[in-house]
Length: 241
Image (cartoon, rainbow, N blue to C red; front, side, top):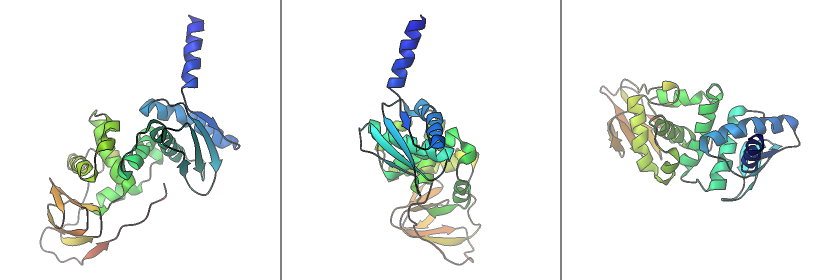
């Protein structure tokens, strides 16, 4: 029996991520987080080299087994995020940017919620905002995860289909940290490009329940009287994790 257990343990290690780093602290961090991420999305036979750098980034090819992770510090959340990208690439679990980044952020939130960026709370509570692949994806996938859905199957959804889940998450308050939107009491907001607003009144948007989704910009209107100035929300570049 002991021999069988040893063989099973050895086989499990052979089918798991293996971490390498010239920086001992990064080596330990990877070895600590990798099994936790694999417990969420499945084991992969992959060689992961972790190096020190000025960004957080994962380099590799789809269905490959050799990857490099760049870490600018010893951040548990960021390590969970990047190791999830390793699994996505290794298994070919790739979709639109909201899914790729959302799944990686979901790992971070589920494993290390205390380390997840609190900017997310502000993004939701504000009641409107520009599209953020990380926060939007996290909201969609967390809702699906909490509902017992197969999260990995959602990679096939496009932005509009994912937005239907996003709207349900906001309406039900089933979001990370249980945060709910608190839109302005009155006024209007112009959104450029993709974005969302917790209102049914809009110009140029798709109304999904209590939420309006924008694909090419528009104006979100909040209840009369519209005495507040017109705020402009512009899309930003890729945020640092």
